[in-house]
Image 1 (tube, one colour):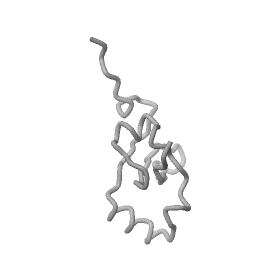
Image 2: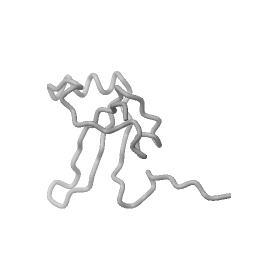
Image 3: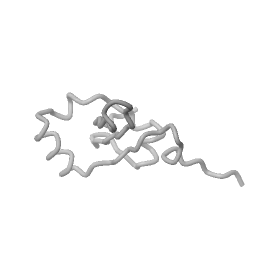
Image 4: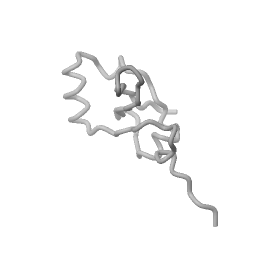
Length: 80
């Protein structure tokens, strides 16, 4: 039986966090954006699938940055 690969554990994949509806709403209000203004991530993306994200959800991506330490980005899950 083949082993199942977890994309979230790969060293080149940054940390992804699936936000709850309330967390996303609060965060978007603080930064002054609407969901429709966020960059997309397709629901068929391997990371979105691994997180169990559905269209309309918001994912926070935390990347390591040589200049800033960490860079945070938000993505809106869209049908793919």
